[in-house]
Length: 160
Image 1 (tube, rainbow, N blue to C red):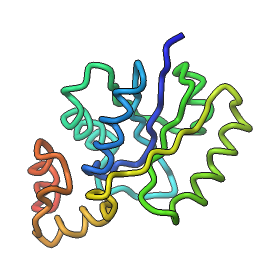
Image 2: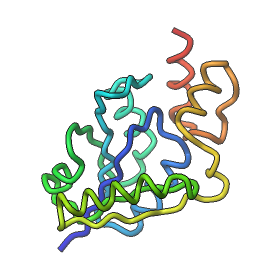
Image 3: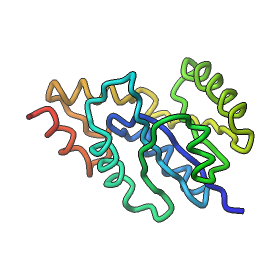
Image 4: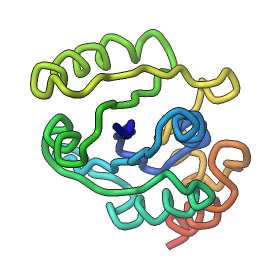
């Protein structure tokens, strides 16, 4: 049996914290599906297509990482993709309560999938997509916050 993990998120845009989780997950699982969420309750800065494109650029060196978009229940998506794990990144204790509740819900909806929590590295603990968007929109330096390969694409979004 192949171990397939899903790493879901909005990735609006992806950060070095996200890439750290992807990198470490790719060493553990046969396949990692980075699943970009379409959430009708949120108005993302980057379109689904743009977020997928940024992630594909950022993860191009990984043979076992696939980027995909999805809408609906994560538990159903995991079943559809044959995944047996969901990876959730944690920056701080404050992230845990919500993610724990979601993990229990996903297990209830799909008992075949386990949720695994990965803590981010210390140098990425402060990072969030909203922080990157704010700094980039004010023309500040996002060096070290996002993969170099997508930096210019992020700045370009705010120059238009």
